Image (cartoon, rainbow, N blue to C red; front, top):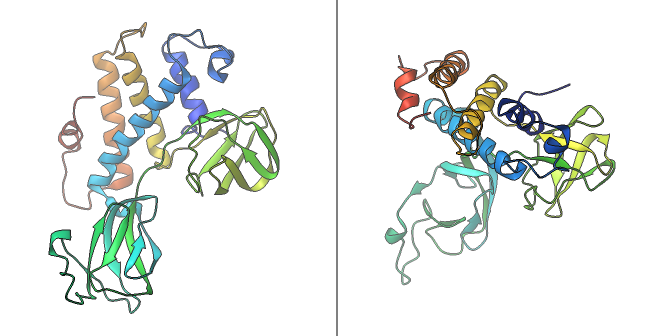
Length: 280
């Protein structure tokens, strides 16, 4: 099985599009090309964040989720995948009101147990000494995708390359495709040592893999097109962006938006909305 949004496949197709393709270049065993794999992967992620920003503006609830918050002495940590907070509820399910940090209570007062403020990656209930389990409703951020060769593996385990993010739980619940052995699985857990726990498959060293974009599948094609356009804008690219490239990508993003996101906020001129994010 092959996902169009698999980072390995996108990188491979970009190299075809700029006439700089070989298996060795895609796999990174040949580094003589004009473009390093790390640069292409960075470009792919910039392209997916661009499409994410368009999707989020039109239909943010696509990315809405919730999690429990454990307040200790009135403080809880924001989930690591939080892009934007929607609501905070206390243990009784009562929504808390957001206040500016400058509005927090002075030290001589107890504060308001139904208000909260955020500072950095923490949330604080305005009243002191609150310890309870509440809930946060928030919009998830889109995570970066990557590809490479595994450094180790075993039953239900695969260790990603050093180019993967070394952040605990970063790839949790994302789809990974093993290009070498032709299987697809879900990452159920991930450590800062870049070790994936797999749902079903057996991993091994020296297996090429690609993590699949969390964008809805209908946007995987426009994602690849957008990344190719960005690479072609580089001075080293042998082929330059044409008006046809731009118009095709715009048309495909627009059609994908109409098909998937609809017009839940009324009639929308998608061309105008997309162009408001900047020229393709």
